[in-house]
Image (tube, rainbow, N blue to C red):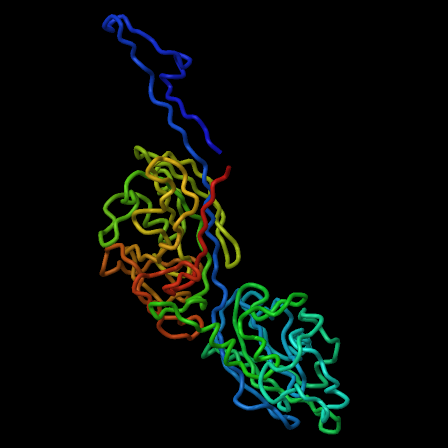
Length: 456
């Protein structure tokens, strides 16, 4: 939405030109120039999703009572999804409900028999033969097929519940070791030895995530993520490689580095290619509120500081964003101005997410609004105000008490180039640029998905 902004002086004379008593004869003094502003909407989605992925098992479970066991870490706010092929079928698999299994209820980890959360699904990728009643005469079922992915396509390509009782084939159990903070998933093959098709359980895939449909979506075709190879051929290799794919710098392309809420934030527009809020490589030298935002998730001082500056406009919100949720701002900008934002990475002591110092270009050189915006230059910054503790576990972090801790030995604002994933056990993740944008082709921490649009 464009609005015409008139100065108070121009409004006072109702937009008319005038001559003052001191004017030279014949000279008309014009009122202030009309400046047109455009309203933009910036959305900062908390994109943290795929937090851990592991293969399940080495070879198929073929005898009653044989088991798979896999250990994994998961913090509050996360879900578990897993899947294993129903071997000796065309494309059936054992899998969790599409939203996954919630792993925590408050401070209590999910434990015990979880078989009721698991179903027998048809992947909808290959036509079903009579494998349950006439397996010897099938030609496209694993392991009888001559080659992977060789069967005819299913007329119904949607993932669907077969309605069969999971306990006829397998059971699943979760336990938790509080001392090591590890869950253990145990899958046990049921007794089907006397039946024509014993329904072997192949190696599978496990993913810890925050949003629904991490592996597949019931009622929709399979995703292009390698799951078809698991459902038809019993191999988790393709989907494991999809989850663990790396960008051009060697950092993860899809796996998020950690779980965190994003704090209420601030969005602002400014002139020039230098943010008025921070300078990379320099210490915070003014009471601009960045310390309060980066340590406590409070944008109020920053909001007031920016709005007191000439040619800077800031807006803020008051609601944090958990994974899958978003911070949304609408802000007016004049031609030549750039857009930036800041929000705290809550599971830290003093880290914040922002665009680079230049900000996001909104206008072309002629003052017209850009048709598309380069929003990938979003990074994770250390504000340099407080000593860093392990992500998600420090008592100086807002969600863990926000206790006072020592000052940072390095007081400069700087990009976080390395993050040790203690929360999920993936080890050290390196991103030399500190990239936070989900699916940035360089790879990174996959924390946010930022978008900018013109309101109208």
